[in-house]
Amino acid sequence: MRKTNKSDLAHELENLVGSVPNIPPFDHSATVLIRDGMSLVQSFDVKRMSTFGDLAKSYIMQVQSCFRFTGKVVDVFDRYDIEHSIKSAEPVEYKGTNHSQVFRYRCSCALCSLFQVLVSTEQMWFLTGSTSSLRDCRRYIPIHELNKSLSPLLAKILPAVHALTGCDTTSAIFGFGKKTVFKLIRKSPSKFTNLQNFDKIDFSTSLSVARELISSLYDPKDKFVSSHVDLN
Image (cartoon, rainbow, N blue to C red; front, side):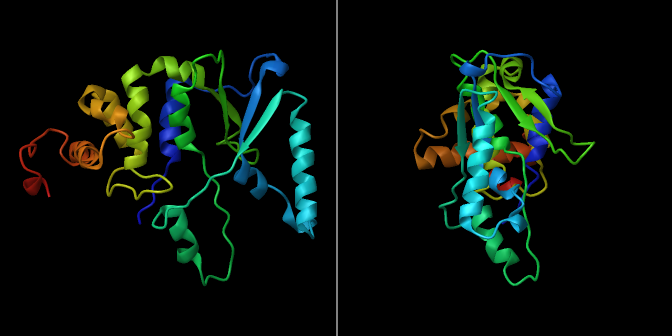
C-alpha cells in the first residue's frame, strides 16, 4: 500500500489562517483539552521505566499537570481494526529489521473532522509542531478561524476527500499529494457535492462518487470524461 505525507494537508490549511506561538488568555474552567494519547505515550522516556506501573504513574502525573490550565482532559487513542490498512501493514513491513522505528505524525484527519463540531465552541486551537525543531516549532492553529475561511461545502467534503486520497486506513493516490488534492477541491468544490454525504450513501453510489474525484485528479480538463476506459 502507498503512503502519503498527510501533514501536507495540515500545512495547506494552516497557510489559510496562520498560527501563533501562544493562545490568548482564556477561562480555564470552561476549557477542554483533547490530546493524541498514543503520541503522548510515545513521548515518555521508557529507559527510565522498568515496569508498566512506572509508565502508568508517569501518565497519571502528566494528566494531573494539565488541570492547571484546563477543566477537562480527553486522551484519544487511535484504533486500526481493519485488516488491510496502512497501519496494519507497517508491522509487517518493518518485521525482521534490527532496529525499532517510532512514527510521529500530525493528525490531519483530526483537522478535517473538527470543522463540524464548532456549534457552541467560541474558540478551538490545534497544537502542532515539535519542541526540538526551529523550522517546525510548536504553534497553535485557530480552527475557529479556519472554519470561517472555508466555505460550508468545502468543510463538509474535506473529510471524505482526505480519506479517499490516503490516510491511515487507505492507500494514497499514485502521483498526487495532499497539496494537489486540496487545490483541486478548493478551486471547484461544487463539482464534488456528493462527497459531503459520503458516509451515508450506499456502496455503489459511493464508488461512483469516489471515481469522480479520482478521475478529476488524472483528468483535470475533463478530456476523457465520457470514458474511463480512455482515461485508464
